[in-house]
Image (cartoon, rainbow over all chains, first blue to last red; front, top):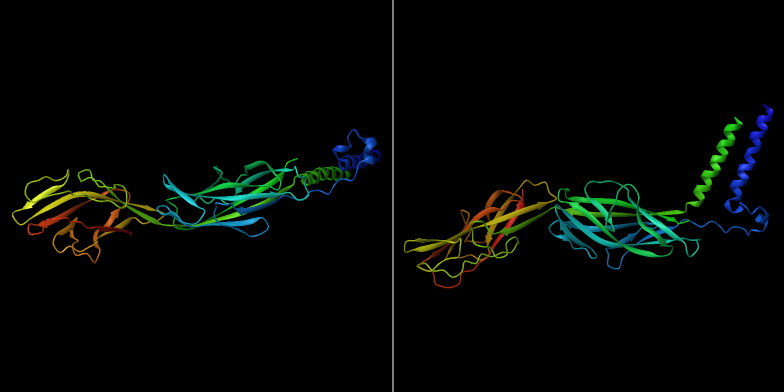
Length: 182
Length: 177
């Protein structure tokens, strides 16, 4: 029994050594000592949401949070806010505007790229939201693939309000996640 | 016991490695709007009426053309009625359609107001004399949304009225009940 315990105990340092050495160590046992120290791990990507040149006003609240107020909208009068347009479809009003999304990757290589996903945080039935033509859901969907770090891109936002929605305020939150490509 | 400890340690190490490699950042945007209820009133040519210029819009006209008490002709779907030697009437139906959005209103009130009072001729809409102008006349207290409703406009012209152009504007207002 004692010998069994001794074997199992010995397994732990071996596993940990493999994990700590990382993939670069495989097949290069002789050169481990000459490998320069690894650079500091890059920080997480930073998303900034901005107003587009032709879009509605976007208020930045810091820490990657922003807000966009479409103002007063009505089915028959549309919207009059700058940077917005509206169109009537069968039984609903669609308000459209544009916004910009920028992703910085501090500490990453200049050639780094990110994949950006989007999701709707809540699921209010009073209105639908689409970005670049993709209807948002609670499950994450791709917004941009392989977006260069440090770049920004404009996107179209559509908010569809059915005529059956009662008058009053509506609101939604859209969450974006940027992941550095490995 | 040691067995459990080893397994837990190895799994933890893998898990931590995964987290360190997944570099993600997030951001949110709050989107708000204020939806306002709205009503749209449009004029539509009635199946039995004079063709409305600007049908299905909110600014239409009824061109009755050049008419005379005796003889002559009237446009299609305009009825001329001669009242002896005293006067004649021109009448035609037209439709008003009211649509509603983002409101729970079930019916609407429709009022009409002649823009300029006419002391010579008599303007009748449905059964209401609207010639006096000044105050809107209620012509439907419980209009139904989304379906054209027919109203007949009648213009009564006395034989004593001077020949010439008769023109006026009727303003319609729909108010949600």
